[in-house]
Image (cartoon, rainbow, N blue to C red; front, side, top):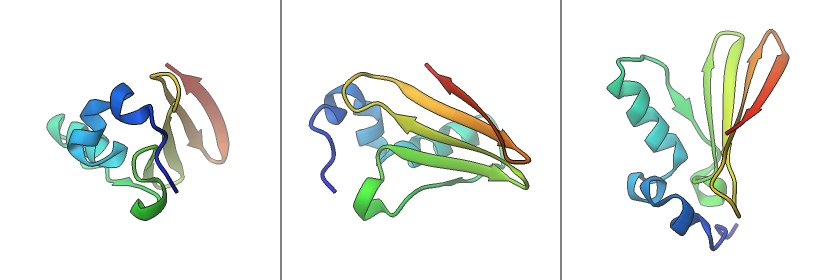
Length: 85
């Protein structure tokens, strides 16, 4: 899968850190969190998706491809709550 042409311009820090999952994991480590970040297969979508999970709770994070935007959801016991910033 080809990465959208606008992503390097919109998210240079994610390119620098090797993708959204790496950047998010580094941020979590910086604040002392023990949470782990997972991602889709790097060969297909490494820059645009990450997931943080603990027990029955998880959050999925996506980035916009035409506009700088982070979308995320929080799920607890299979009840999603959606947000975009």
